[in-house]
Length: 128
Image (cartoon, rainbow, N blue to C red):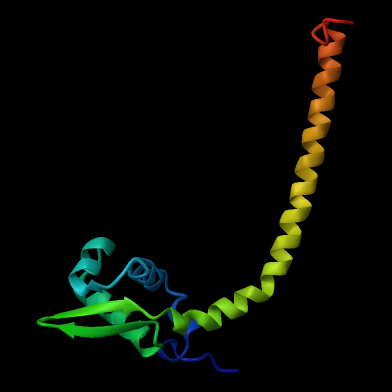
């Protein structure tokens, strides 16, 4: 099966780390390109190229305000990613619950060991 073009698929578009950084910055609110350039430490042509890809998949929207172009996140376009990841949440939850049980068991074992150590060295309950 042929891979979808980066500009046609939100999954491929956000696979690029710099594009995810742009989305992270835009999650805090609308920004002009110059702000993104400054925050990300990239050149304006690079930022513009990434924004074009994100616009083409609908992940960002742009509006003109005077001489500025302001970009904002369109979270609805990221919903397919959210829906896909949700399928794995139950598995993660089960693993975390198992880990919690193991850690709790380890903690109670450590407490028992500590109490036995204290008892052997006369550091236990002074009423004994």
